[in-house]
Amino acid sequence: MNLVQKKRSERNQTITLSPAERTELKKELITEADISVGFDPSGKIICGDVVRVSEKLPRQSVDLLILDPPYNLDKDFHGVSFKKGSISGYTEYLDSWLPSLIPLLKPGATIYICSDYHSSTSVHLMAEKYFTVRNRITWQREKGRGAKTNWKNSSEDIWFCTLGNGYQFHVDRVKEKRVVIAPYRQDGKPKDWEETPDGNFRLTHPSNFWNDISVPYWSMPENTDHPTQKPEKLFAKMILASSNTGDLVLDPFCGSGTSAVTAKKLGRNYCAYDSSEEYCLLALKRLKMADSDKTIQGYKDGVFWERNSRQLKRSSEDQRAASKLNFFDESENL
Image (cartoon, rainbow, N blue to C red; front, side, top):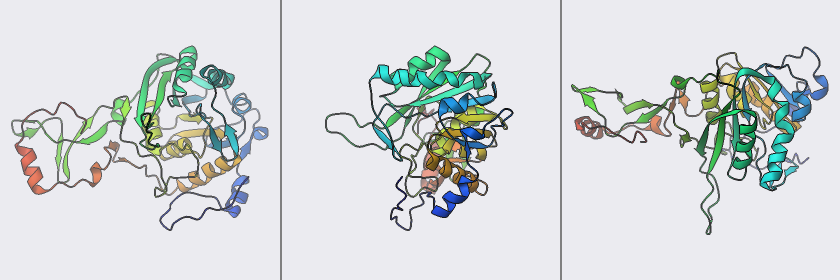
């Protein structure tokens, strides 16, 4: 294990572990051997194998399952390598551990499964085998290298599934506050939008295309060195839409703990595990940081704000010009 500290700029906010922090956090880390009959998974970070840990957890205890397994790509996870294989091979990999999670789910549980285009076919096959597939969300992560002979790979999929028909979905919790360029007025008053000193905004229903997500990078306080870290805002949408306060959110491939941290900030219980001790320790550190910082980038005042819109302050001339417009903006994608 390479624990050499990287040189970073003063503005770099990447969360790292010092040797002293590793020593202290290891005292709190739970392993497979620590799980016995009557174990309460709420609020726990567990270091261990997905199947062996899952077999020890209480049955029908999970309200929301978030799955972010290694994609079908060549990737190094802190010294542990995952190799790209065939579609059939990756499908078999998913099927080697997914059944162990199903007994943990409550009858009304919701499942979100992350994937990219290399993995999406296999994920869809497994999702249909074990769950009811409700939708496929595509989110634009923007990061990705340009290519001269192919399209830039800058999006990923999330498969929205349920165990049955009695699932929960709270659409009012995940509406997005978007800038209105051409607002419609009725009798001189705003219709379906809000006029504020900082601009005109409308709450819109969420679609299955999310283009308002910023991938963590070095100047963001949630960033870690995990190579495939997901943004807190991404998981916040799933957690708010598909769980209630106090519900148990499970993530058996938690990496640096984004799902657990986001669940904690939103008042949910969590249980997360990963086979990497380093990432589990990072998750524990981030959970401690969440005690004093409940903020989620892009989420404030109970709504998700369109990216950069909270910083938008339109000039008075723009405001007056916009107020004179009296036609419906059909796109709502502004």
